[in-house]
Length: 292
Image (tube, rainbow, N blue to C red; front, top):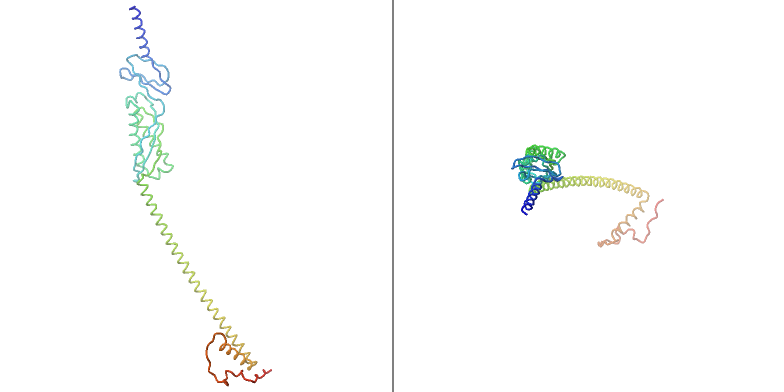
């Protein structure tokens, strides 16, 4: 009975020892074997692995790309413009041994990377102008930032795959100030345009009024010339008619005088003697026949 118990205990110890001596590394993992706390082996290939039981420990690290998304921060550019920059970084653990010696955990590594990225971001962007950040030169700026971050992250056993500027905007208060300044500038331009338009309109009106005055003056002059020519021609015709038949001309002129004196709304009162020269054509004798 005691022998069976001893055998069972031995088998259990062997199973525990075997379980402690064997471990697996997944395809997405890499492992660091520590013996009494000191690094002994780096395993990057997946599969079933062996270690010394009760002496060796295994530290597993992710072999895939990892992300660092630091919070957006404000950076002052070379032209003293302040912008708010939002970045993201993709990295992986390239050397588990150095990684373990430098930072040990992924959370500690992310904290270090945030500091490195922030410092590199300020150094690079502090030497460029705002138009460069908003132009095609932005690709070169991101490459320079990635180069600096990679150089500082390499001693940590970290490989930087990519550093990108997700967003680079002016702070809200700066954007509002710029918007107000642009609004004021547009209003100033609008006032200038309206003033220039009013000045141009006044010039056009003045020129039109001047042309109108000239045209009216020329028209009045032409009318006076034509009126004078007409009066002269009428006088000539009357003179010719008077010379042809003086008695008929006297009768015609008298009839015109009668029409003006007695016709229409003329309310004038005339006090004349019946034998007045004005009524010479009202006599009983008809006027003499015109001379041939």
